[in-house]
Amino acid sequence: MSSLAPLLTAALLAAVVAALLPDAARHRTPGSLAVWPGTAAATLATLGLAGALAERSDVAGAALALLIVTLTVVVQVYASRHLRGDPRARSFFALSSLAALGSTTAIAADDVVLLAVGWTLATLSTIALIASGGSGPQTRVAVRRSAVALLVGDAALWAAAVVAAASTGSISLSALGSLEGTAAALVGALVAVAAVARAGSFPLHGWLPATAATTTPVSALLHAGFVNAGALLLLRFAPVPSAAGPWIAGIAGAITLIVATLAMLTRADVKGRLVHSTAAQMGFLLLACALGAYGLAFVHVIGHALFKASLFLGAGSAVEHALRERARPRLRPSRVGGTVGVVLTLAAAAVALVASDAFAHPTAALLLFALTTAAAAGARIGASSAPASTRAALLLSLAIAVVGYVAVVFPGAEALVPVTTPAPLPAGFTAAVFLIAAASLLAIRSTGPLSDRVFAFALAWGRPPLSVPATTPSAPASAGGPLEYRRVS
Figure 1 (cartoon, rainbow, N blue to C red):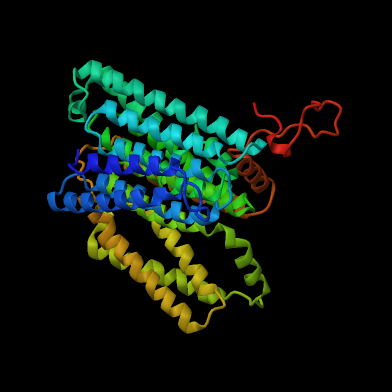
Figure 2 (cartoon, one colour):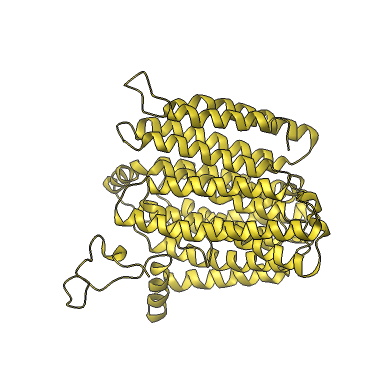
């Protein structure tokens, strides 16, 4: 545990207290005083990261702590305007600070008990945050689903802590490597279940899509910080010599990656698309951790958190932006330009692969996902109706980004998290997941009975079952609210 951890804890506790203090100035949003202690906590987290970089110790944990605290402060600043006049504002500031306290406690913990305490504190605070979204049927479904899935994950983590402590005679994380046999397999499997639940992945995936009904500040905290903690949990328990954990996390991540990507394409609402995008990214992170690519997973955690927070905080202007785009004259996309964009992107990737020898990396198959995404971006840029000079500049920037990712970020991410434990998943597992994902995307983009079945399956992913319409005699008299939330099994 860093020497700054107690000060960081004190600052976040002060933020909780400040959120509950009565405000002398009536023009201020109730609870927004929490921003000032939160800013102090962000400063301490910055110093903690600088110290971790200097000492080359737990850089990933320090970076994740800084990310969570900073994003909490940024979202609170946004909420001071967004929630002005909202009677739930004070509870939001207090609970968001409490969730950050729980997350940073789990990150800084040196033993399994303190880690589980911080983990559960963050869970309970987040469930309360989701409940603050109102009393409507959608919020009730979100609270019920999140409570069940997340508390199942927390119970699994506490069970893993008990088994580890009983088997090793120590609660220290450093003793996890001495686990063996059944105890090691059980701890690995239980921790994987906890990580899967927190990431909103299959089969505990239903809670994350339901949270689209909550407020924008809560959504930003959920998707930018809370769900990312599963990667850290798998990292902390990486020394456990168990093949069960990586297989559970890898299979759950692969299924979620494929289906959530398809589900994202079926949603017409902005927040729904963002939610399933997060779920797909969490699936990729679980898959990367299962393969032992913890450094790459944490690079994606940081990038995803920053990007998704900006998207959620800007979701309110999405309709206005769409109307502006619709008002512009539509030009036919250039097929030649799209082809050129794909060719240039893949050529840059090929040069980087040969120059850096990245294809020889044990987890090189993960590059299939990143390079396919880059190629799709290149096709979109090249086919756009922007001026040729603009498209050329954007394609050049994309090519530079691809080269940097393949030649620098991908091989260099291991320095962020130096884990030497071999992963039990074969390299072909990732390639198989990629092929299934590609085939599924082609199926949903085509026409015909198969495409219709895939679309219907993806559309229903994570949604409560539909009830019988109220006009039917068999419908319950008490049915009410939106159709898809009237009955939840």
